[in-house]
Each structure stands twice: as C-alpha cells, then as structure tokens.
Image (cartoon, rainbow, N blue to C red; front, top):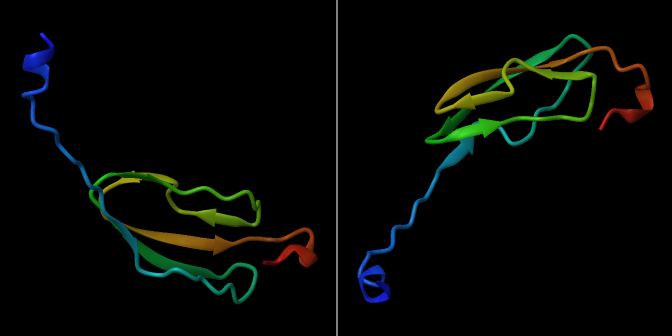
Length: 79
C-alpha cells in the first residue's frame, strides 16, 4: 500500500572519479603520456580525433592509461 511505500528509507549513491592529469601536452607525433584514473565505478573514454589513441577506452576501478599521438593528416587541426 501507499503508506508502506512511504516507510522505505531513501538511499543516495555517490560515485567518485579522478584523473592524475587534466591536460596532456602532445610533444610530437609518436609521443605518449601516461595518466591514471581512480574510480569506484565504470568509466568510458572517447575522442573524435583519429590521431589520438588511448590504451583502454572502457574500464572499471583504478587504471593506468597511455595516450599516444599518431600521424595527424591535417596538421592545422592540432588542438
């Protein structure tokens, strides 16, 4: 009944996610940088740039990742 439903305590769930670097400065094609994710939940990384790759794009929990700068066919789009 409605009266019984109102007696159910509410629960708030909070997830934490942090990264060790918020900016990665690309030095040159073929260079790479490592950073870490600390999380108590699942995470996803995505990019629309084809000249950037990430070692893992899906994960859960804590993980060290590598970002690699590949060949950029249009050098004017480095940003």
